[in-house]
Amino acid sequence: MPPSGRSWQPQGQPARQPHEYVRAGTTKILTLFQPATGQVRIRPAASVTNAILHPWLRTTLADLVAALPAPAVPLTPAANRALWGAWEEGLTVRFTLPENLPPLRRLLVWDNLAGHKTPEMVLWLCQHGIMPLYTPLGGSWLNLAEAIQRILKRRALDGQHPHSPAEIGVWFEQTAQAWNLQPTPFVWNGKRRQRRHRSRARQSSGGATAHNQ
Image (tube, rainbow, N blue to C red; front, side, top):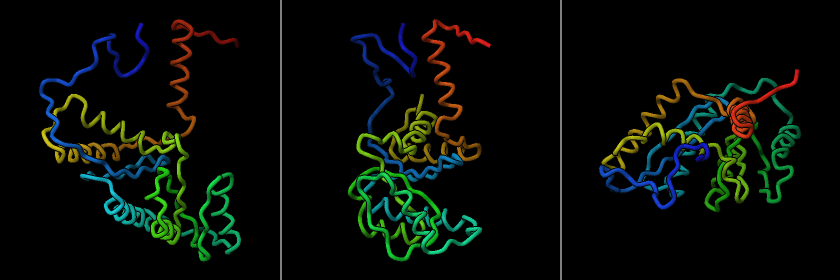
């Protein structure tokens, strides 16, 4: 019996693209995801160099921070620095926090790449009240932007045959707009994970479970 999953193929018969498929290039999708609300912001691009990614991030993050309400109770400088520093506890590699820190408004989780650690970008984030947190090596699954990308990709492209990278980008944007109308928050150990555990329990017990009252 094949295991659960999106698809499976018999040995020696790998999955193949349909005859309509013509590879005419690729599209990169810049993604900024808010797990607590489920809202996603994307931008199609031909490449994701720092020259393209960083300006888009700055504009988008600045808009997000500007939309936040003002802190209810202003913290003292010492308490504010302690709040920032708390997010560095347990890290093996830390960066030096600037001397003057605004109130902490956002956390930015992204990949552990050298281009994401440039002094210019890190200082800009700190100046706008954004604390950068980097996923550990081999821990890219902690970056939930990749999870929402997989969902959008299936919804936008499954069963479709785009003819150009630009068309792929348009479909992604349309799919993200539809998603944001009724977004699903991503919660650690939430309902999704509990459903997966129940599904595995049913499979391991032959489709039936028993509970003692």
